[in-house]
Image (cartoon, rainbow, N blue to C red; front, side, top):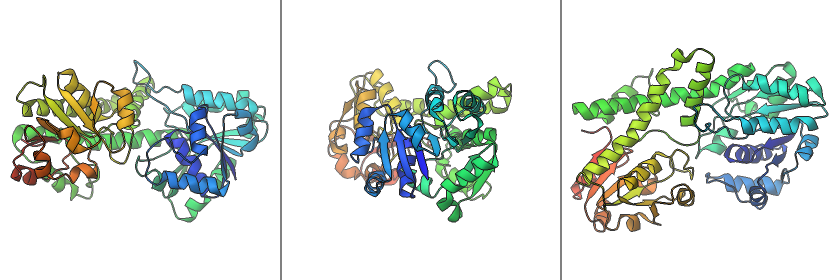
Length: 437
């Protein structure tokens, strides 16, 4: 089929590449000329394992092209996927829908024949219905230009798997025609027995927000238990292990630590609450505000632990921060817990040196006040405190004895529960961790 993808950020680039690999002819649109040129030359705009190789495969097949011409996109495509961002509004918990609305408004006047416009972006419930009205008013094809919603469920670091072998497909449609078109697009996935839920537009929108809200709640729950364990002397890791044996609960994401961040979970749960309040059902999701607060408190508690390891005063103290990305296998620093902690340490007078395998360039742009190093040994040289804030395998595997030879003081804060505390203590380190007394 002839597909177009509007927006070539993380979601759009991944979707365009994978759809071409599946055998569709894909034309991807973006206004950023430099990004388009990079993609056309085989360079992806983000760090995502396996994606550069998939891009080369798609380009070599001749099934993937890029353009900045919306009229060309409208003339080419049978199905148009909208993959633009929905960041948090400045000064509000709500979502900024200007990119999604702008994409539909720009595309619609050029739609002169039957087609399907499919939203993939994460949006508040009710957005699709409003965009369907906008499409009907602006498209020359009228009702023959339909709208559907197909929310994405990408995990950074697993984007290819989550596109080609997803846990489920959700197809929000308003007609059997739209359903048939989407089933044709995803025929290889359906043939591979990927579970598929066909539903209405509003439910499809809610699935993504509800899923992220549930996941955030599970993460914050175990971190709330970590707070109780710290105060009572209990062991949160053993508590989590015991809870995980209950198959009603399960162990996935039941891991205490610094909490969640990135460009999705924090802003999505806030937008979910904001929309529920607009609908008059704010009481039903009031607990998500506490979920958000618990997550924020983990960052403040990490700063406290570093301060304690430094002797109570951070002024002039060199701190080695291991990690900048919000999670391993990513270069994404949006709402990264590691960088918020690093910045707070800096603001208290510490000399903070950050190291990360992939995210240093992005971190330098967003946090220019911090110092950066190319290796853990370089970052730790002369440090009085080492703080592990992103659980990259490179940091999990550090030799505490070798690291101990370059620091000024053997004091570590493990904010991700990624280190073996006994091994580090045996090497002469003072170890503090979230959730431990």
